[in-house]
Image 1 (cartoon, helix red, strand yellow):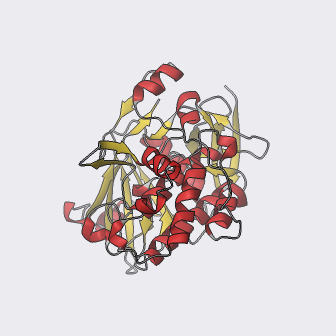
Image 2 (image 1 turned 45 degrees about the horizontal axis):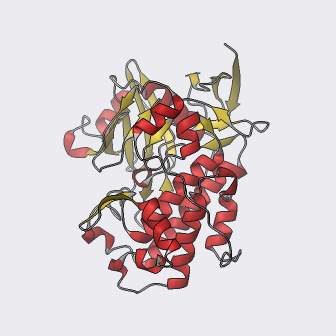
Length: 365
């Protein structure tokens, strides 16, 4: 097995150059702060359940207050987490060398025996999945101006990791629960535990499939061929969610459960896209701009990945720097069940961890 080593500001790690392309080890936190386990235990009141603000397959997240008064989010890796070690290393490797106003800030971490902990800025307004998509009451807090701001912020973050830094980073798990909101509702892309680095001379890498069903680009789900256009697909799904106020898998009393991408495509073909805009906006929005955002979302989820725009191009489209009135939108790609992935890829399913909402299933193949 061939390994190569990358170093970013004092953080050194090795990465396999085979099909898995996973990061193998980390030596130290480099320019970030190294916290002691005792320090973080005090900050979170002994990791008390009253301070718990989130959980996932990796473990739990706690609200904490450091000795200098700074409020932080403390992410503790579960000892039982089968995927957790590689995700811990990937998070450090991806976030240690980058800084952007729309990326969550990693302050440092702790490795103390079995304890592996990461420390981030605390986000007062939690995630999009718990706010915008969490309840009708929360959705009313997001007027069109707020949704536009959130959407462009996410797009800027993805364009930054795709195009402005080297090696490029593919996030692999862009979804509503990984978009955090600060006190001013500025969007922050978080959770780089599944991210992959793509060297300059590579257009893609081949890797195990990981991500969330519904946000997964079909060509990646069925072949393991990962490109930046895989993230573009996920962003397109998220953009449709933000404008419509609906989850990527939703329920209608008349038609039952449906996939948002499919519904958006059908409404586009029937020239009914304005009807997809969240009715809770009470028509208090710029219809031309909302339709443009929905159309950009559909361009990002096109079945043929070569037809999807780069993120920097998507931003220019959303900002109306590129006129897309006459741009042709082709059929979207959609993976609706695990059997499709199993049949095409012929790999065994290692784990599917159910989330709180239907369709939010992280998967590792």
